[in-house]
Every structure is written in C-alpha cells, then in structure tokens.
Length: 78
Image 1 (cartoon, rainbow, N blue to C red):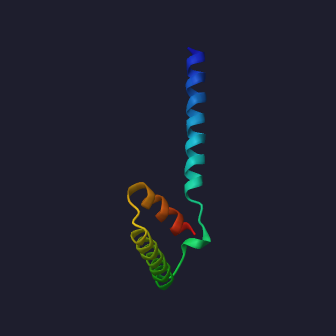
Image 2: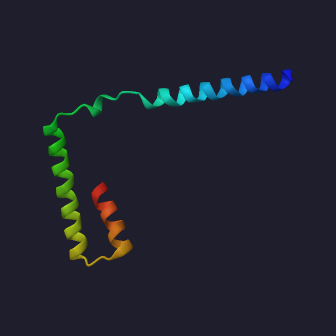
Image 3: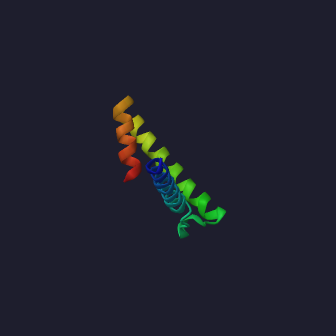
C-alpha cells in the first residue's frame, strides 16, 4: 500500500511540475507585440500589396494548383 501511495504522490508531483512549467512558458511577454494601430495598419497594407503582386505574377505565368501555391509561398517570403 505504501508503494502505491508513494508512486501516486510522485506522479502527482511530476504532473504539477510539468503543468507549472508549461504555463510559465505561455506567459512570456515579448516587446514586439505592443504596436500602435497605425503600425499594424501599415504592416497589413504592405502584406496585402505583396500578396496582390505575387497573385498577379502567378496569374500572368498561368500557374495552377500546386505550382501556384509553391510560387506564392516563395514569392511572399522573398
């Protein structure tokens, strides 16, 4: 009986330590997340313009399905 109680307590302590570690990693603040609405809007506009440019290039090249997706992914990254 003592072995079962000790195993139960050990497993409970391990689960508690694991959950505390997992939760601690989620709440790490980063300085880059605090942006003004104007900065967010400008960044969003740039991303939309780049997507539109890449979409038009893919259309001009007459790419379809997988080739279009691969091209768009590479175009947006660069």
